[in-house]
Image (tube, rainbow, N blue to C red; front, top):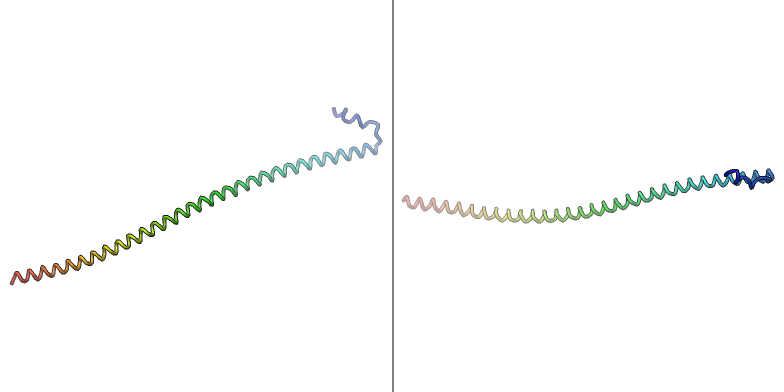
Length: 120
């Protein structure tokens, strides 16, 4: 087959054949260069897609972390309110205990006084 391809060159001047050879070599070189650039382009496109996917994943992770952070902040606020309520309840109960302790002491003194009066 290559013989048929080369047949049209028969009878051409050596200078013309040399020029044809140079042009064919240049065409082959350009084809190889084109293939290399196509491969580079495909590699760069694949790398770009990989980076885009990575950015998308990081955006999703950031959004998830933001939601989780918001949830934790709300939980902290809720716990702080609960702590304040418990602290207030504790103060009220301590106050009630102090009042009842005072009443108990007063009642004990009254009992002692009454016992002393009964003994007389």
